[in-house]
Structures are given as C-alpha cells and as structure tokens.
Image (cartoon, rainbow, N blue to C red):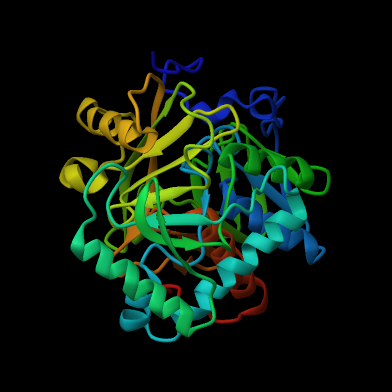
Length: 386
C-alpha cells in the first residue's frame, strides 16, 4: 500500500505523525502587501531565513507554493549530520580549509535547532556510517574511506568512534542528530507565524526586482530571498547549469524489531540510509546512484525500479523481511562542485539552494549567509558557491 494524499500523489510517512497530520495550516495570500523582505519558499532554509530576519527586527513576508515543508524539507531522511554532502576529508582536499568551517557551522546548527525546538523534536542520537550496508560484506574501498574520514575528524578534534556491531563495521559520530523533518519544519513555522506574515499555497508566479507576484496578490519589498532547493533552475532559469535537480526516493515499513537501528545509519558511501522511529517503523532511502541518469529529473514521483531496490535495502537494514506501507520521492538540487549555492540573481534578489541532498543543516547555514549578503553586504563564505 502506498500512502496517497488528497491530490492523489504519494505521501511521505512522516505525515503520519500526529503533530503533522493535525497541522491546521497557514492562510493563503489574498491581496497586496509590502515588506522589507520577502522569502520565497518555506522549507528548512526559508524558515531559517525568516527566523534570522525576525531576530534582526525586520518586517518579513514568507510564501510557499504548497504546505510548509511539503517539498524536500519534509520528505527527506531526517538526518542531521555534520558537514556537507562531500565527506570532510574529501571536501578539505577539494575546497581547502573552508570545508572545516562549514562542518563546524552545521554542528552549531544542531545545537541551535535543539535549543529552539527541544529534545522531543531534535534527538541527539549520533549517527553511524557503515562500510557497505547491513548483512553484506564490507566494501574495502568504502571501509578505507571511513577510516580516512575518521582520521580527518580526529585530527580536527571532531568526535568520532569506531563502530563494529550487529549492523556491520564503520564509524559512529556522536554529535549528529535525527528528526522527523516535516515535524521539525512545522514546529519552526508555528514559532515564526506570530511575528512574520507566512502564507501557504501561495506560489510565486513571477519574480522581478522589488516585486513578487502570486496568483491573488503582489508583495512589494526591498529584498527577495529565493529559498528553493529542488527545481531552482526552473524558477530562475539563469541558474541553469549551476544547479541541477535530482529525485531522491524513500519508503517506510511496518514496525520491525525494536531498536534495530539505534540512530540514523547510512552506508555504501552514504547512498543508502535509514532511521527507525519509536514505533519500530523504518524510513529508508537511497539508490539514486544505481539509476543516476533516470534520477536526474524534475519529476517528484517514485519509480518502480528504485523502489524495488529500496525494498531490498530496507530488508537489509531491518535484518528481516519487511512490509512497505508508504513510498515517496522529493526533488533536490545538486551543484557541480558540491558546494551549496548562495548568489545574487538580480538587483535585490538572492537565491540559495543546491544542497546536494543534505539540506537539513547546510540549508539554514546558507540561509543566514544569504541574509548577511542581502542585508549587510557581507560576502558569502568560501564554502558556498556565489
């Protein structure tokens, strides 16, 4: 059985959480308004931008084409992992010392999220990177890369431990955390809605300096922040070639053995991943690299071939046969060099996205850089593409 929402599209199992399913929603925009800043997109990075702008005392309007976090922000694996998508030792070799700055900024972001949302939403479980996936022989090259990453982390005083257990061999990173991504985003939106004007189901149909046009009104503002990851090049064609949309797919199982996964676990170079919730359900994703050409797409619907592969991955993570009760996909943005994008696209308009599949922490870090760029004129850090 595939979870289906009212529109007939696949629905992420994260939405089964009572806090998410009970979301009463934000209004849609009806009429014209003015603001100092308009944030387009209310996923994790857009909400972080709204929060930063609020903290500065600025008048903010935020809009989203659908429900808050109905895109990738509420459909991803829920991992809060330190660093960018590129593992730290590789990022240091390719980007230089700025990669370490980004890693430390994402760890600080976990602390910030936990302080805002509480330990019930942000669970400091740590994470496990495996050399392979559970039940399969360790991949020698992956194992060597795990060791190289562990050595690099240790050299820079970032906590890391060797993992050898029922799931396989790898490393444990105790600073990492995990969330239900939809619940995290809606909790943030609830906190922000009292001080900012936030609107759902209000797509931006046209963007030009100082003006955001929606189906039922116009926002006039001094600064526009476009906080979109997947399909960013469709919204802003001038970014085509700098960011490219891919589809990431997931599924959820019926409950399996309790405490099978003590924390979020990822293996096979991070391409396959899973977490387990309190009820015992597994939330499993991955396989994009095995069907790479097909997954470079702006379609947001799951496919039979990837989902069949994920069935086997889920069984491996579970250590037993599984029953799948939800399947879904999300669109995310990738950049050519692995660095997130934060750039001027027009007078008074800044876009940020391209988180390479790991936007839960990198997105908010990039959002604050976008605010600093737009409000203070501070150049973006070297770990961001500008």
